Length: 452
Ligand code: ATP
Image (cartoon, rainbow, N blue to C red; front, top):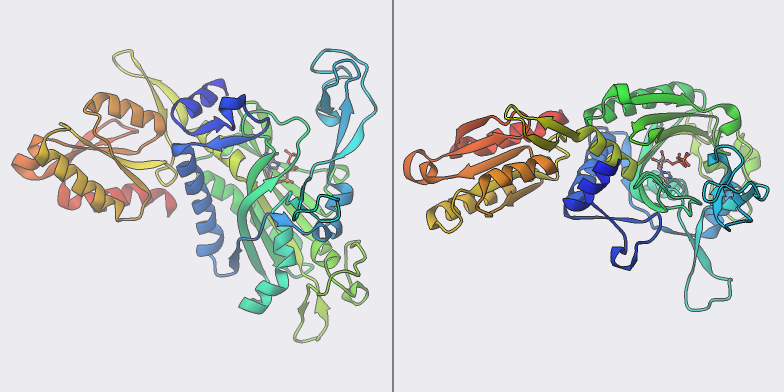
């Protein structure tokens, strides 16, 4: 973990937030390469969940959330972690994370009894700070999918089964944020709510577990580092009938990367008015404040059914950490020197191609290199970097370390002899001369191979 954290800072993937003021606990910023990696991971998810299917629509809902939404979802009452205080050093800890009965800070055993601590952040709405008008920062993106269920249904007229996908920030006032970007207070989630007929829920649950494992594999996560954890009944969240966690062997241990829950009809039911004639399976919160029924009509029987929902919910930040951990390797070369490589899948690499002119003040070489940069950039594959530091060897090493799959060098042979460039491959370090006319097709093949 230390090596990853240090590389992340040194190369501009991830920084401690508000670093110059000593940081903000449990909050991180993504730097120039981090933002690319994170966007690529999110794009890969969106592609798999929305574009490659015809039964899922997207959504981008607000972060500020009406308290009623989180009242009826059950979060106001139950979205808590057990907290203990150390009476000696005044620190606070998550009771279920303690090993033994001593304070991890000072070793004292003088701890309070555990009590529930609500993880939601509250913020004031408007200018009057009298507590009457506030919103929550959403603790999961899912609730806005449920409250928009009817809007999306009316707009797109889908048939069951169908899903609504969303990627966005979520906030949890974690008692003890830790392990770099693994447990933070501001993070991003990639969530799909997949609505199915009651009775077909268990089968769809299994399907989604298999789909999600396959997807993580496509992002370069080794299946030997993934394990499924069937959450026991007494640990299930209040809305869940069954949850399977996808656990990943993080540098600090085997922990949850994604949760795949069968949320039954709990959420749609709880947010609906006139629940009595909805034949709900889950014990919904009685609701007199909603003006809607979140149900679909069965065209044969004419009765209203509240769909069950299967929810694969993955953390973007945990995903980034997993993908970085998988990609990181230090190799010893034949000459005994070491090189650090981030062997990202090409579609995730922050920089797809670096174009390096052999001489930075040679007009012919520079013009050619900049032209190639424009041509490759126009392919829309992601970032193509023109970089004229002049030291090709150093450029290769830096690009190995940030995971750039290809470095293209423009030299005298390019402009004086045969219009070819050297393409150096990150993983094999092999170098090939490729005709400039074939370069775009070559790059497209190499970058998109992992996506199909
Ligand atoms: P944990 O038990 O680790 O606190 P959780 O079971 O509360 O996680 P879920 O409510 O299932 O998490 O949230 C879905 C996903 O959101 C998690 O699998 C994780 O990837 C991500 N996530 C949740 N909390 C955090 C956090 N504090 N920091 C980063 N990612 C998080």
